[in-house]
Image 1 (cartoon, helix red, strand yellow):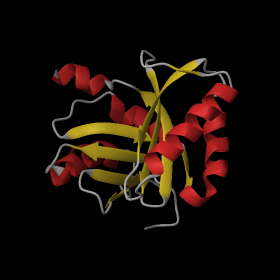
Image 2 (tube, helix red, strand yellow):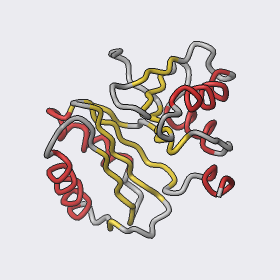
Image 3 (cartoon, helix red, strand yellow):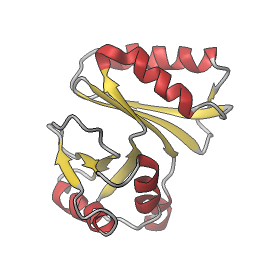
Image 4 (cartoon, rainbow, N blue to C red):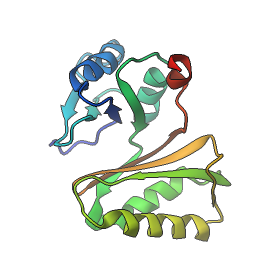
Length: 166
């Protein structure tokens, strides 16, 4: 893996990684011809790297499109190592500054037993900051791990493209 940070984490429909990669890649390539899409050790999980686009800009480019093989797209506004989770949470705190409620979505890959630990720490952090975890919130705080790497960002809980595809 690269030492640079990804701008997006993309999840794909089962068994459709190549098509998913092509769908997202074709859209972003127009804005950054040197983008890199890296397959993780986990099927259906891609990391997108750009030397030109910020996570927010990349997310705006891809989120309002129609897809057949993309499950979800997450802007990687914060990243780090699970061993330095407190620094990661500080970055997340900056994202949440102006929010009163958010839906927390956590997916842990490759670290057995960490889901409950991270969920508890994140929920406690939200409570301490006076932010309600609400399943009805249109804004999601996505936290994803790939082994010891942790990625997070704010995005739409129901991406626009899912509504179009039914």
